[in-house]
Image 1 (cartoon, rainbow, N blue to C red):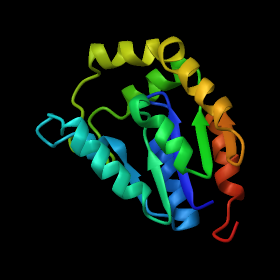
Image 2 (cartoon, one colour):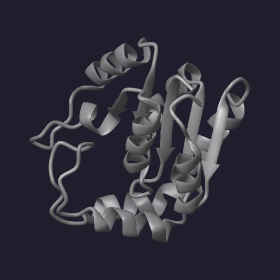
Image 3 (spheres, rainbow, N blue to C red):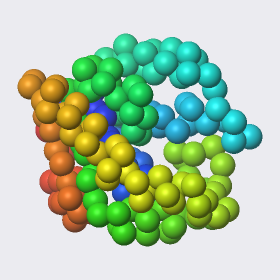
Length: 166
């Protein structure tokens, strides 16, 4: 495990899982939200995002946290390990709501409210994003370690059994 991606619905706990995996493995962690979003809530250009992502992927070791379906295929092709947090929508909604008002290392601002558009994106994730994700996973499954967790407990069990040299 040297090049890892962590994907799943917003609110699933990708960043929390990524931090725990970083602690266990020592792999450098990159958050796509920190690349894409500026502190003033604007975004960098797609070209700049792609350039920065390619620079990260050129490194020997990494964890990349985030969906960004537009660039998922290139990340899947470059990685050796994939974690998909495929949790129920209500778990993801609760996770997103619980982090409101909390300073996080994976976002350049503190969310002050549960934005209606963001909430809808979580509600639509199973029908709008997951089919594409599963299609890509099936297409590029060979030669990659794939972990699909259906609940937080599965992810916690995995992390609790992970050691630095495995």
